[in-house]
Image 1: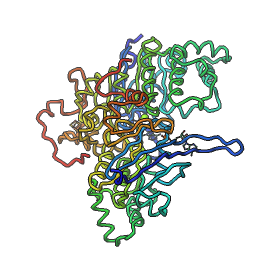
Image 2 (image 1 turned 180 degrees about the vertical axis):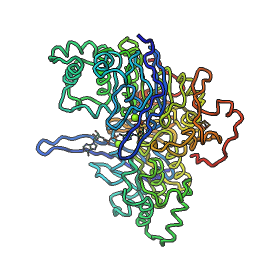
Image 3 (image 1 turned 135 degrees about the vertical axis):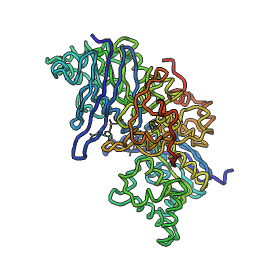
Image 4 (image 1 turned 120 degrees about the horizontal axis):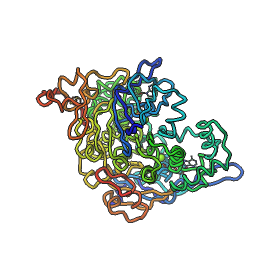
Length: 264
Length: 340
Ligand SMILES: Nc1ncnc2c1ncn2[C@@H]1O[C@H](COP(=O)(O)OP(=O)(O)O)[C@@H](O)[C@H]1O
Ligand SMILES: Nc1ncnc2c1ncn2[C@@H]1O[C@H](COP(=O)(O)OP(=O)(O)O)[C@@H](O)[C@H]1O
Ligand code: SF4
Ligand SMILES: [Mg+2]
Ligand SMILES: [Mg+2]
């Protein structure tokens, strides 16, 4: 079991320091440990400011940990050169539009994805792969290719970014609140796409969200964060429907049910 | 005085600018009785916030009232003078908390200074700190807010706290009707729950009589409201008791919306949920006929060219051809809808 962890983080800690003369420290994350197996969707859930993005950004090597370890495929994350690392670890962020340039059509980020590959296919090959990838995720290439970002919905853009990661086929996709700017009505499509990545490409996903229900729907295992620390982790069904920690219990009890009514 | 808190008839409001004419609110009707808590739901861009601005007479510069009637306790707000509106309707009868109010608070003013400014605008005279405190402290404490918040700056309050403070300020004059736009959207779940409780409490305490809450979050509205109105592309498509609409939606849009939600229930994980294909139309050029027809899985030929009527069925209002004589035998238009 131990061997097949794609990512393993151990005692990961990030202290943000600010100020020049009298510096103050803010805990971003503290002693965070978990691992993600191949083909597993692991969810980090917590309220805003609990440290989810900090952990995600450390795993993406966008910020440096203060202490602790990140192992990717058993090797120290910082021992990889950056390009090689980012071929293995890809990201999808909150605002899909931020990942696209408004002056280029949406084919560009898909095309650019090939530059990350070691053996970049020919132009013709690329076209074919892009088309078939879009088809795999149920999008009609003729409706998508050649369009500009403002002509697509947020949900379509996020799915495009997920398609992009299908081309690169990283070992790990870090998805930080990928649906928070998308309407509930189209959110499920993005989640189903992530589930497909896991099923079709056996990719591992670190899914970051403040929404327990989304984590429950797509996650295999879940970790609940509070003030930088993981206070409970385990299989989603167990953590959400038989929580041990009072904080988790309260969090679950605060989600408004759809088919019952609170006594308030 | 009219016993209806609010009567809206065929209300229209459009944005006009260099971008064209956006038919944001395009002929909606609604009656709210005193004592009701009504939720208005729908995807973003369906016109919910525009509707709130139009029924409170506080439209942003490009949004224009284009016709129809809005009566608040009998006052025809688009007919009466601004003077009458300010003196007799605003704050006394109706108070409005816009969406994203949190971000628009002046960061250099303490909470008590907001209250002083608001009072001065309402009455035309100045208020001292002591006067403000005396007036507000009891009200704040009744809503479970410690009096110290009167002395803090907005940035010193957490998001949840700030939203509650804004609600407290907005209900200082005991308005009979409170209209609030996305009060819980920017908050963490624990603060959301507290906010929902606060809104129920201000009605229970008799501070307000009726509530209209706009939110894209159906589960939150399910906790807060008795009645729910579903808005799509500038029109109301379904209106009924919240539990009935949620458990047995009549309108295809409501049904597809419900099917796309992720309730936190054990069964959710075993279901293959699907989202609604397509997007909310560009309201500069809404689709002909039923505005939902390009996304509807029940679409009939008539839907593509004729606007559906509002039909009453089992105490609900549904704007859909399916519930008419034509719809009973209408043939469905066969086509491929992407369901994901
Ligand atoms: N660049 C930064 N500098 C200083 N503090 C930060 C920075 N980024 C995040 N923080 C702080 O770290 C904590 C965790 O933040 P974050 O990881 O963004 O949480 P989440 O993603 O769960 O909302 C918060 O208290 C936040 O204010
Ligand atoms: N200031 C504005 N100028 C032009 N169009 C606007 C403006 N504000 C909103 N709209 C448009 O009006 C429609 C309704 O928007 P809104 O009332 O904000 O919907 P909701 O609150 O349901 O998200 C949308 O098509 C939106 O793009
Ligand atoms: S009127 Fe027709 S297109 Fe519109 S919701 Fe009803 S069945 Fe669907
Ligand atoms: Mg974050
Ligand atoms: Mg709005």
